[in-house]
Image (cartoon, rainbow over all chains, first blue to last red; front, side, top):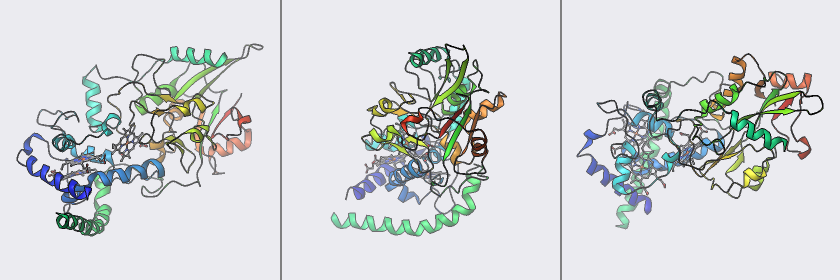
Length: 152
Length: 252
């Protein structure tokens, strides 16, 4: 019942968005000629989250690493740069996933942990933007700390 | 209304089974071209890990240098452990310990990380099952079910786990991390699953010329780690606890 509703909502949302697609850069490529996405587009609109959530548990618990429903894969293909070479963040409505979610008032916490842009975008940001955090190189201080804790 | 909903369901199920066939066909031809990950001698991607393997690590403390922390830097780099400028709460998946024997003055240097126990106390105490041991012996946090209670941190005799106190940014795609979860060494599970057969720390240690870290399959008698252990033996830290750790040390 809820699923059916979600399908309708999603289809409706798409109908609205379809009027203004130029803001959202198109996917990198088709997954396959016939279905375009990893499943037919209609199915994706309705139940993309079921595919991802199912795959999530298989990956984390069982170590299954197929690419079809991988969240990294969704982001890698769907989040592409606009004409200025800028990748949208999930906080922006031009982000492919956010475009629908903001409209349909869907809230997900996935991107608190998961990268909302592909690896090349993060690398680019790190090279150009000095405000992006860098790895801890020097752990001496912590080292002293853990030592004193150890020797106590 | 009810009728409409049911129809939607039915259509979607049909489409799905139809396209699954297609996807399977397409997968063969297209997936390798689309995703350029190499999987030379890795397990097939669609196969679950099994207890045929038990991944582990051997640390030779005699080869470990007191003033080298290449393993720590490599781990931070590989997993995107950015510093928030407050070392007390920065995540540590691996850290260096220098232990001085007061009598002889000898300093033993060694990395300390999750020991990937066969009987992990962190798993015993976890109220949600988020702390778990994968079939192949890697002890992980399923961050999707972790509620951040930190019982596991209390239970761990090795102080191997960190809690993330603050919102994070710019995580690496293969290493999702975020506020409110506990985390620790994953034995580079993403690398293991793609068949690298090594961890970032061990790779860095080797390229520093120390070769103090050896990663491998403890269940495979032909693996380098098993041969080394058979020949020279190794010590499990706090073996008295009977946890049967997957990490062994030599020279302690």
